[in-house]
Length: 216
Image (cartoon, rainbow, N blue to C red; front, side):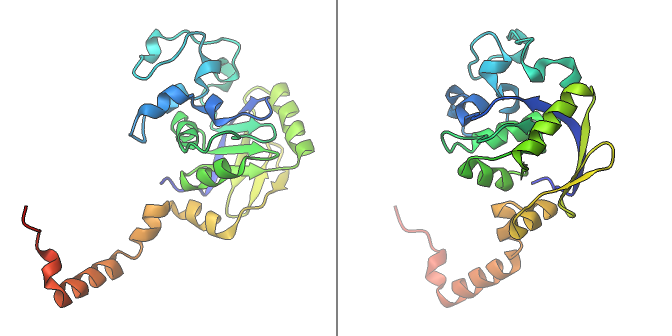
């Protein structure tokens, strides 16, 4: 998992409440058993005018020019600004996969659905909860200033505005540790690889029959 320490990026505003996970990554793309390749289909039904299907080349799609991520001023955005209850709906982990693989590193909103919120941390995305009035102010500033960027300092737990103002945010200590060190659940386990190997060697020495394959 990619480490998250300090990130500066262009902000894209998604001015919709209650964005559910089926909108983030529609159900037809959940057929894949791989954890890669979901970025091109992020917000698929909003980003394109034609119906998307797995394996359909992006070059053959018809982009919706009115959707925010298709507007040139937001090309390359890596911070998503959203409204309340972002990520509601089903618990599909494909939603944070799609956001991360599109290029987003952080999402700022007044509130998130619980399961989506937890899944973000497990996949290297930082969901930041800020007061609704503060989020509305950021929407106004993004609209007023093309190229609007924010700096997110996870160590200090602040969002830094272009003029230098700092907005604090809360993050649970363990989640912060995992993001800063780039540790997902597998990475956390692998920190103890020496102990795991020692346990396996000791068990095999005391119970050597475990190494034998049963006859077919």
